[in-house]
Length: 313
Image (cartoon, rainbow, N blue to C red; front, side, top):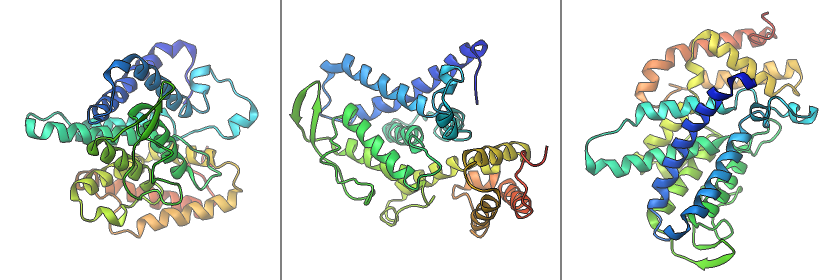
């Protein structure tokens, strides 16, 4: 999605809303971190704003949404067509729907934490995206850990997280900020929230929950909700779905036509083989039927060598 200068005010409004959700999530996690130094609030704001701007740019078709369509040919080859700010905005909209404010104060803190996990997972799950790479999810989780190190005084260097073992263990303690090295012991809740976010980001690779989540119904529920929200595009109207399918083809333009049609049809058929595509009962009730219709229709086109929207003009 590219915006002209005439629509800059609309874009500014979109950014303002995204920033509000971003700030809300960060404030929740910082509140759970006993090591946070309130005397560094101005520095924290600068760091958070820098990260927010970086995430926005990453989702803006390599900056074209912000920079008015500039960019060299190599950048445009890697440009995003579906994994953009619009995708983030739609996911965040679902989060607002499912986590409406509740009056029960005993549940308020837990809901704020769940919202923070979902919001930051959304912002970071496609932060690193290259259609030619097989490690986007791991790389996005590494980027999130760098963010946690900068903002939350959690150390990337001493973390047990790695791209080869992304779901292992709790994280730890040493951190550097404002050129001062501080040894800290982070609040368990802050660690748990950060670990959940990393897990959610990695889970978008297979769209399934890790086995160590089977014994935690609460975490598993919100992970499945996050994954369902990420795939909600599959249940859109046929016209909107075709636009999505075309956008995905644009991101994989480097793949030969016949190969793309065969491989994507195989992937979509694997979704249809599931007992159900959406785990959340509400998402399933609203989107499952349309989703299956969309997938069957695109598979039919692909088996004939037709790309929705592109070859149907």
